Length: 156
Image 1 (cartoon, rainbow, N blue to C red):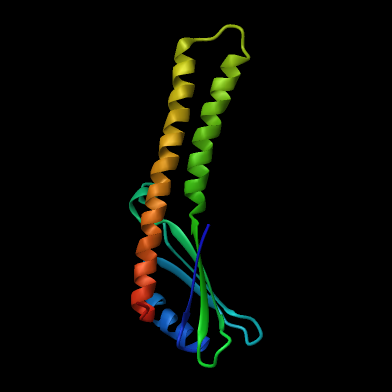
Image 2: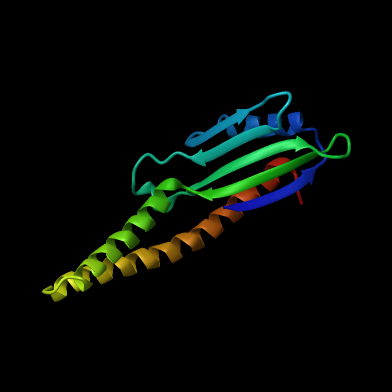
């Protein structure tokens, strides 16, 4: 999870209205905002994943944000957390655990086939390569969200 925080020269209510007006009408985006007088304003957004193959091609980051009043008047403190979508975490760890389980099952077994070693090692390598590729995509997707939010809120 990565954190991005900054201050903006608007009240939290104005910032939330601006964010809500832009993201509420966007198709394919799940957006929710919760406002409470005593607590900071919280929002959450992510792209909707309809089919499994969309997972690799769309921006699959979950964005959690919090808007609160800053020390000075008419200024807001914005905290945004970027988190990898749960399905990606599940895919990577499933591949790695399955590969390790096959590999370890063969190590502790007396008779084994070379093909099963090959399959276990292949699944493990695919999981590790996938982990590195997804991390690179994760960093790129975070930058896309930062640019989008900066343009919406007018941050330089």
